[in-house]
Amino acid sequence: MEIQQSNSLNYRERVLPSVWSLWPVLLILPTTWLTLLPFNARIGEFTGLLLGLLFSIGVLVSIWFASPVIEVDERGFAVGDSLLPLDVITGYEVIPANRAFEERGHLLDPSAYVRFQLSVNTLIKLQITDANDSTPYWLIATRNPQAIADSLVALNQQ
Image (spheres, rainbow, N blue to C red):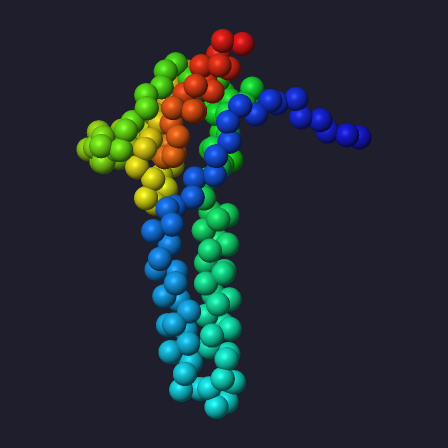
C-alpha cells in the first residue's frame, strides 16, 4: 500500500533564531573546559574540550528541531503539528517589526493561538471564524509574512 500526497506546497519556512542570538552557545565550550580543567590529570587533557564541543553541538541541534516549521498548502496553514484549514481563515494582517511588541503584549488576546521565535520580530496575524473554536486569531512569528499572505491569497483564488 502506497500513500501519496497530493498537497502542493505553496510555502515552507523553518523559523530559526538569528545568528546573533546563538552567540551564548559558544560559551558552552570554554565553560565546560574550565570546569573540567582541575580534573585533566584523571580524565585526559582534551576531555573538557571534547565534552564542550559535544554539548554545544547538542544545543544547536535541539534549537534546530525545536524551531517551528510553517507550511501553507491545500490542507491549510500549518505551524508545527497545528493545522488551520483554509476555510476558517477570514483575513490576515502582516505585523511589521515596529508593532510586534504591542501585538505580543497588551494587544494580545489571551485566547489567541501564538507561536513566537526568539529574535524574529515580524508576525502574521490570521483572523479565524470557526463555530467549534473560540480562538479569535493565530499570531505567528515569521521572517517573511508577506510571502505567507501571498500564498494564502493564491490558494483562496484556486
